[in-house]
Length: 479
Ligand SMILES: Cc1cc2nc3c(=O)[nH]c(=O)nc-3n(C[C@H](O)[C@H](O)[C@H](O)COP(=O)(O)OP(=O)(O)OC[C@H]3O[C@@H](n4cnc5c(N)ncnc54)[C@H](O)[C@@H]3O)c2cc1C
Image (tube, rainbow, N blue to C red; front, side, top):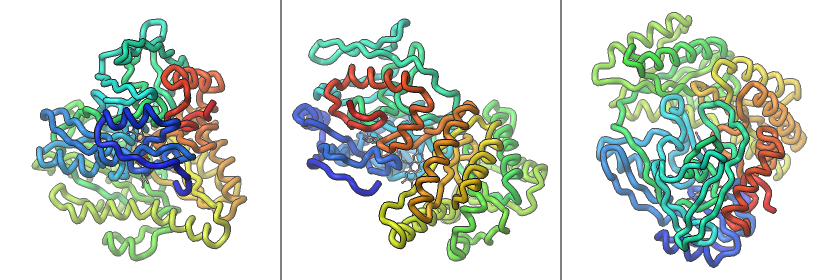
């Protein structure tokens, strides 16, 4: 996010460097690639601790890698690829750093198959607010039955941390303040804590053999057809994971008609895809295939035919990286077009104009109701909007495209209203981007867990960082 001001910036190369810097600083904001969409990585006068120089990568085995917090995911994937390995829970932006993605419990397209970052983190080395360095492995520290952690500092000091009692919604991805469950693992408190409880300097991550992947672009004649195709593909995927079918779908991305209408003709020309008719929408699926993918592709054709999809899908086979890049570029063009439109309005109308977007997740069976809710709320307010995102998870990003400051304010109110109704549907308004310093997202967090929940998060923060030194004002306002 634009703006911000800092007391300075430091680039520690080791955990000991980072610890010394944190011990002597008054307030510290850890940053990774600063791709946060919530203002979480935008300084407000703190010392910026950039993890950029923490770049070691050590492939430990066929199932684990140790990586520095400052390793961009694209570099991690390149290093793993040379061993035939892969790290699955990648957000759409592969420039994000390992530390940043753990701090936000990032997720992405393939959460449907692989879950969010949390599931893949085996251990973290963290610098705590007083400069102590601790390494936490999964299974090493579990909350007591009465909901308290005891964290032993290297000095011998023991700190008690209360586990919040709020109930997290049952959704496939969630980046909504501190994780809280009965009998939870202490490592899970740090994952998704957005820099407020400790600074991650390195992590041990689980990895898998690199899957062979085809990309499949499907043109659907309506949103209803896209939902039917996605529901059918989800079922096929579940069968294949049980060894009962050939169609292993890992992700399905969605681009609505309003997003497509914003794309210039050159974007379609570059992708080699004809511009879809006005009410059409696109699905981009990742399908994992064995060497002989005939059975998977035949089953895919059957599913699309049964759902009434008229056009043949466009398929980028596993070896065809250029074709895959073309299809991914088409998807990436959507947020880029919306951002460009907002930047133009900002220059023309008011420098205070900003992107106003949601990050909602609902149980898959409520998706049609949720999509109707997003559309009706924006249309009632007379707002321009576009919707895209991770359809297979029920996680979409309805974006208001403000043409004026008034649109922006009405858009914010509309998103808050949607958040309340998404929560009532059993969903969450904070799926993968986190809470950060966005007043809207912090209000959504309050709607999700109530004032009591926010007080419980504050109690956790106070136990680990009583001076409110680390990432102050991120997730909850400072004391
Ligand atoms: C084009 C685009 C697409 C995106 N798509 C997705 C997506 O599909 N899924 C998704 O989840 N997100 C997505 N994002 C958001 C963003 O990429 C993620 O939140 C990402 O995890 C942030 O990583 P980062 O390294 O940029 O962290 P930053 O933005 O630098 O920091 C994010 C937060 O984490 C804290 N932090 C950073 N590093 C550390 C550390 N080492 N220790 C402790 N705290 C730390 C910061 O203080 C801040 O609060 C997207 C962003 C963009 C711009």
